[in-house]
Image (tube, rainbow over all chains, first blue to last red; front, side, top):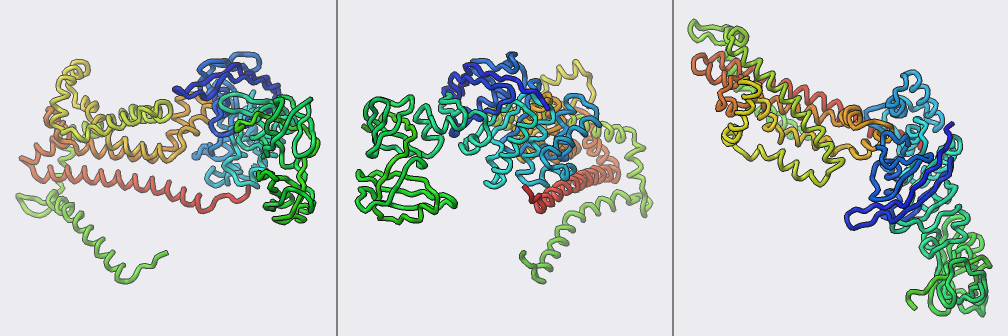
Length: 348
Length: 270
């Protein structure tokens, strides 16, 4: 069990020629907390992680770990465990030797490092494979060994750089849960970088959404999902419908109903960001909207309805409910009384 | 899998025999000539005994072997860290390094000798007239072959990720290179070393023009007065080269086989 330390990124900027990969990024991670950085490719999330790991240098700004500035400390002295997106096990070493490598670098006696490495393999459930080589393991097993190897050194900070992106969906979900279980067990402060919103929301204590080198919003998963601070966050975290709306007196008027307008909404006419699960569709022979298609997704389905103005809105519902609808059915579309973010209509 | 017909097998066997004869016949002729007693008739091993008994020839063999050894060590010390560093830290310089390494292929040996004459005035001033100073020019000479072998080995691994993983686990640059990168490009290093040895043991022009008595220079000189000993030395060098290439082939084949087996039987559980 390790004790987590606080991590502080202060006004980090990273320039690659004229391209600004990071634009004044500041982030505070509490001791033992797991923060996920979420964003599209090129948003700067991996750059931030690499700067924290010491594998890249910031153009300006500082990095503090446990209250000490480590901006000029080389990567091999930072005491951080890292799991990479690409498979990174050393091909010439067995699983056990891979996990013990970091301990060897720290001058631990052979018996001690082998014992600790075996404990770590126990933790990720791979003790039976300790004498195998990386090429004899599946992708999921390799990433679990990489996790054990990163944790074996009892790092002050654990860094996960899209560790699940090369795995298939089922293994990804399993390993995602395992990462969270192990992280809670060892209590290491962790930064998890991903472009998968489901992954970020599932494992993190807090999720930071990044865009163009900046942190758009940092909040607990449920809060981030329910109260997106910017149109980018609303759009990136969840699939959103954009519905014409009018905001007055803290209420957004759309689709013939009024719902609370979230903080950050504009006043006057705009576009409301409505999540599919907040859209209601009711069969109504006098309705002005019609079902355009139904997509079956297993336990849930997505139902698309064409509004009177020709725009299409999607609703998410249980498949048992969705089977009542067929293309061409007249319906009435509404919105549940949860808050919506209303943004400026750029096309207007 | 495609099945071979009988005709195909016969054709294949004929090719093997034809190529075998083509390569082995000159070697057989050399072995025959080097063991022939030209004066009294019959067979003698005198030419082969001369390889050790003839002091000048023996010295030249030692010098050539030392040159090969020093060249390989110097080449690896210069090339391996440089190529790793370029790939990791200065990828923009890769084209330039490749151009510089391949340049010796395009320059005739005679031009290299003339060009290096002034440089070697300084080399001999500091290090003496030893033939071993040829190591410097031989390192340059083997660069094109060694570069290709090591470059191919580096391209076959995810160098950046492996190096970063080692660094994040606490390894310094020297440890990263020696304990993580080198073991994973070992076949490329062996190839580079063996090819370099073959090049050095076969080099005549530069040594001769520079006035150094290496094995090849001695072979040519002895050939003017003692044909069988000269041929015995040539055959010995050829056989040495063949043995090196055979060892290289066996070592790299072992690695390839292991890799193929691992790919065929990967782990299945997640």
